Image (tube, rainbow, N blue to C red; front, side):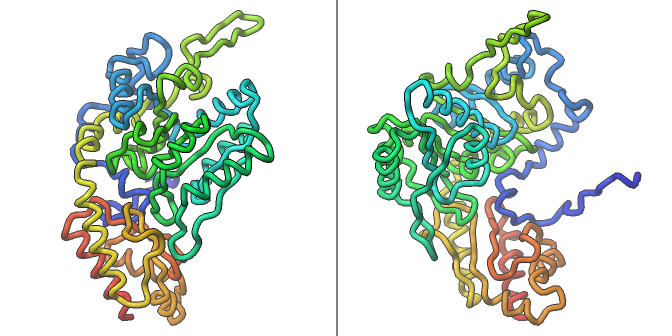
Length: 391
């Protein structure tokens, strides 16, 4: 082993990190990837590329796969991207140009629980993000009425917003935003609307038509059982020609043109293992969303068991409608004061029991997920917390 080799230390561990649970590769997919030789070279899908863009490749069937992705979430057209954040950038770039052409303000409205990448994408595209308030402790809910108030405030002070963004399930509390209600508001006010479904698309049934969404962004490595980094941008026929517009650039000296490239996805997107893994995983992903109700019931039982320990409380909406769980844990915080490792003790103790993914150094608040765990694995996780609480 060379000194630069970093071994993977978490093989055969139970992973409870909520960023990871929906992205875990199935054993049969890992086996297929190895058997079919997809590990031999980096851009392994590009041998039969004819048109110079990975989304147009038919061997393997990437072009038809993207049509399936769009249909899966109720959209008309899709492109794969360098993670969900690149999909969000594509939307922000498109609406920033649209706003200028249409005489709109450069202000966008984002929910107060948005992922940081939403705000970074807006900043990169010269857009100014403003937020309505959430309901505060302990639920931190986003309300459609507050979104409407913020829209009307922006309209009165600056003009029509360039975009409204809702994070379908937020990465802090796992709250489900009122995406349908906000979609109706945006449709009535003729404001472009994006739903970030990084934590929902691939684990629960969604249809962007129900949201009246113009754009839906997905994360394959968070919620579609795929290797990182990979995302998808799904849109409607109305917006497809804008967000997926082809390059019109012509090099001054050589006269080169790049007419099949899409500037908003950096010309040509991920063409290697992440895309292959998503294609292999998709049949199982498409099937597993039908089990969402059962997953939520199992999650509810786990919440009850955690709170029965005492001095532990779930933050976020109740009843909870997503697998990401954020617990306030004064019980473990008090124990940490007696431990040599202080706040690091909890992650260490769980690791000793073969359970990984808790944020190291935190014991006053913890985030985790039991999505997709077997009954035996879920029992081990719950029992581990109960055992540690007695220290």
